[in-house]
Length: 404
Image (cartoon, rainbow, N blue to C red; front, side):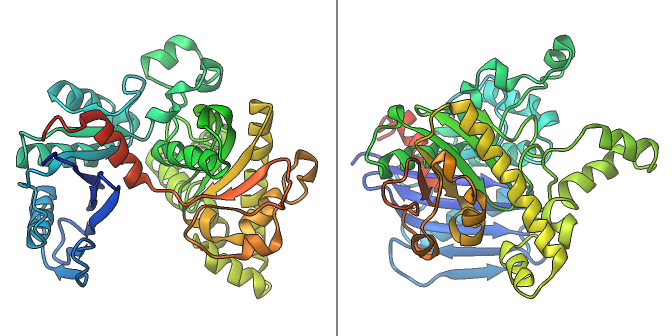
């Protein structure tokens, strides 16, 4: 029997998300989450979708990522889906930062690990955890291909005019300063799924993808290739997010340090964890913000208006970058579920061919769907993202059945 299963791992600093998929039909066999790794109150939640059994939850100390992955392997084994199965073709890992070198999914070896580690200074919150997951999985199954799928890879097709910052070239090159972009697996998946929704090939479609979650990013995709994206050297640049400021005059940082007496670490914390929606109104949950607006809360209203203003600016900017836009696609938690955000984002842009149908926009569904009026010049779509499936697809396409 050919090996057709892929285990997808997303290793965070204190968590591991996982999914086991059968690539013959792209079905999910199991999904789960280990959280609070390193604490006494660690928790593992496991859903055995293949057997149709009830979800299982265990609590208790899980010391580190090695212990977490061994616990995951144990849960999978209970369902007959253990890591020692000959049907397991590969393990696909989400790696946030691949720099300029990694432009596609890559089988991990010692040299690849070393390069991912070299990129830690530009991704200090993410790459160390990703490395831990890679090393642990390699130790558990050294005979199995471990494939790194990079958040930055989809954006490496940006032209230099979009990727370069206007600073001294030698300084930028020495410190690897450029726009890398993130959420790449989501933007890749959604741009292709949007083309499919329109009944067209990705190569024939120009799409503005709006990935709106607690972290948020926009991309301009021409013919299946990213030509611009809102996040930059780090995930801080761009749209207003749950706790991140997005675009900011750099001199604000100097002002806070010189006049406000703040340290670099304090400014970093301010802009990444105490800004965005939570900094503006004290909430980063769009549902709660909308509830407060309905009750007449002016701080919540202003936060929402700032969020929408930035979003519309990016829609307009990427319309100009692409020249022709066939679709605008909303995705991720806010994009998929917050109808008021979608409505407000395109309000007043009818001259650009953008509009939403109120009835269609109000429908709640897990399916990809159009919410623009029939005959609109530009389709407006809601396309649920599936980053785990994208990682599995890229992983399996790379290793195929070579490990049968």
